[in-house]
Length: 342
Image (cartoon, rainbow, N blue to C red; front, side):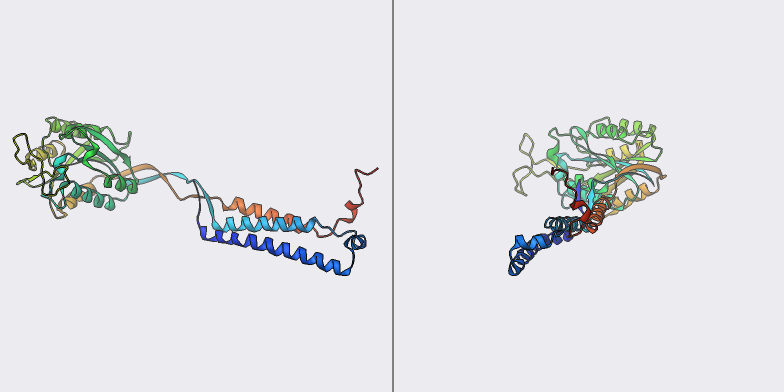
């Protein structure tokens, strides 16, 4: 990649055409002045060492030097430096339920949007930790591999929608198993899986998956999203008052399966918190993460762009140096050498 750190200085290049016009005007005026003294051919015999080409070369070198100087001040930067940074932190894989039931509005604005807002604030409070994201419904897949790039994490989180997975269901066990395989290999830092779900229509291997994760040294926290009373699920019509119905024509009501969520958290030796319209669940989750043992994490991050103005500055100095030794007059010694005359 290439960019200028201070592109506003490129406006200096606007002086180039102005200087060219001034130079053309001055040369034309000089010729007119010589004609006032006599025939230019006769006058050239009186000035044998006057050069017509050297002033042009000097002007060209000065013009190029000015252009390169503008590029130098603008601060050319090529690519970016990939650096290995070591920080004290933990690794957290988030498993987010994106099934259709997460569109229910018993939590404002709805369960999924509330989850995304909570995750965004969670990432904002992270400093040296790594975070990854898995989304699941009937299937589970990695939306964001574990990283310390929080900007990318928030970008991926904001784009999540139930349409990302066509098969419906709540494959919590599959998501936990995938998360357990997604941590950085050979890292000794504490690891945690955070499951955010309403537990609706869950599959039966979730508790077993949480137990297996804990046996690998990974605890499993669960955030229950939704109310115990339940709420209908909006359909795809776009009408906010139109809801999904079952085969008998009854409106489908989805409720938080809190008992199942607590069982998963217990099997994974993690915490359980219910998300509501307050920040209590986020606070409980952040406190739990902060209490984990932080060890040295190694991350490869892109630092600032690599400054390359020095290269252009050297060209400017060379051109100015050469320009000093080019005189407006012909060299008396060299002008007497006639290599191609008999």
